[in-house]
Amino acid sequence: MSTQIDQLNTELKAAQAALDAALVAGEPSRSHRNEVARLEAELATAQQAEAAEKAASAAQEAAKAQADARALASTQQIALITTEADVALGEIAAEQPVAAVVDVDPLLLSAAEGVVLARTALERAQLRHGELSKAAGRIQAAATRKTEERDAIKARALAKTATADDGLAILTIDEDLADLEHSLSAARDKANAAIPAVEQGALAAAEQNLARVRGQLAYSLAEARLKRVEQLFLAAHSEMVAAHQAGGATSYLGAGRYVPAREFRDLVLSQRAYWGV
Image 1 (cartoon, one colour):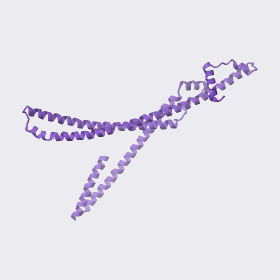
Image 2 (cartoon, one colour):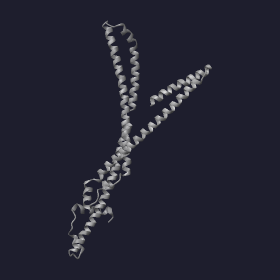
Image 3 (cartoon, rainbow, N blue to C red):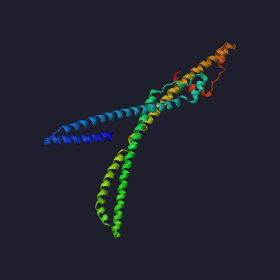
Image 4 (cartoon, rainbow, N blue to C red):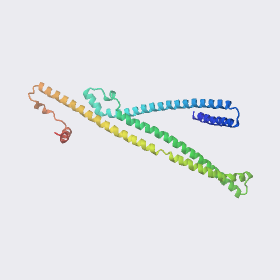
């Protein structure tokens, strides 16, 4: 589409120049005006079509980025809520697995979108850098061939086997080489300027942010899981006491036969100061 627009712009400039020349020369201008109007209409149509095509492409890319981000965030979150602790807790409480009912965390989704967008930007930058590097490589190859051609002519001259064509070619080879070296330098500068260091840094930052958000979510989920375990423990303990009393015990102390694991007792005791008790 851009090629068509470029062509129409070129034709429109030529038509406008022809109209201006006709006006200066006092010649009839109607045919020139018609041509200018026709080209302007075609150009406007082509520009509108290009704009619509770009808008549609942008919408498709945005939809794909959102889908990729949701998939990435979902994968990250499911990994957090399908741990061994979650499975065991679900079995104890006879509950539906959390992964089947939970929505994707909005902060995790936002961080995942940042990673997806950064990856896309890096891929585009790498493609652009690759194209510019290949262009510089083609110029380098041309300069190498030209140098080899010059060296071959000089070798034939030393061997006194040079031809008339060699004499004509040598006149422009040095100029050709100078032009190629200039072009090569410019091409290399463009390629170096397009090295995607910024995009690589942006992706690294986005991935670090995703890891940070994932860590925060992991803590929140672990805390919620622990509170649920606490509720289950208290309910189970109440059931044990009730069962003990139903068996004829007259004192709550009789339920003291339950002895928690040492690690559990140590943890509770170590947290008393933090809890303020």
